[in-house]
Length: 154
Image 1: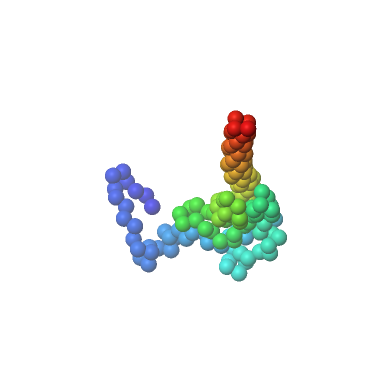
Image 2: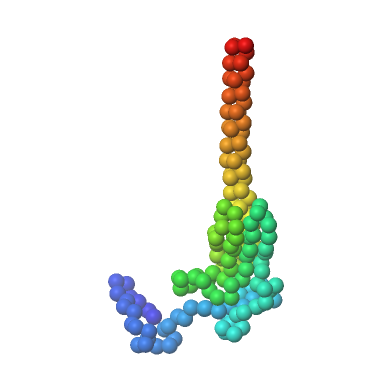
């Protein structure tokens, strides 16, 4: 479609456009032997669980982090493809997810999510440790005060 400068282009409804003008998004995909996503039919997009897992860490800081190939494009933007997903189950980041276009991005995203899980756990642990430490410090101060009062009156 050649457009002249200053010309306004109005899209026609899909049923009026010629078939070669319509850009159909790619909905289903499968992995080839090099772990690249290739177009597939709805029947071919399903793969076994072993083939779908990019990475999986069970019990990592008391939660599970899983990255899988979805087989279905989860993007709502034409021209963008989101085939892989990392999700956290349990812990402070339960339900957190990130989506990617390629296998390599998914591997890198899995590592990034593991770092987020680890730091979320440490933040909560340090908050708890500070609370316990403050309680012990406060308890120690109260005991010292009681000892001093006992010495004063005895």
